Length: 67
Image 1: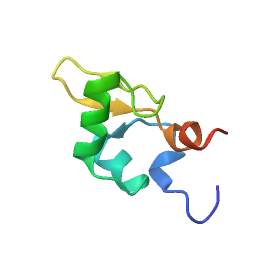
Image 2: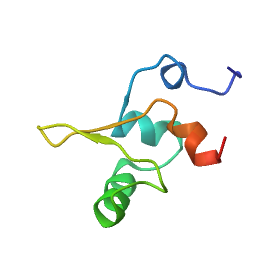
Image 3: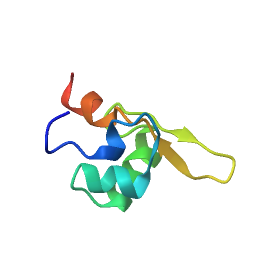
């Protein structure tokens, strides 16, 4: 883990849309819009809960940068 990696991204839990947006310096609404249009955010697919909340995989940062 480097000094710029958020702790919540490496502890194995899933991220809320707000946490995911903060981690990638993006607005949560931008993520939601992309998800509604394509079913993913640049290839990262969340789990959709019955209450319609989205939980993003903790390794989403690595998936976005292609590691």
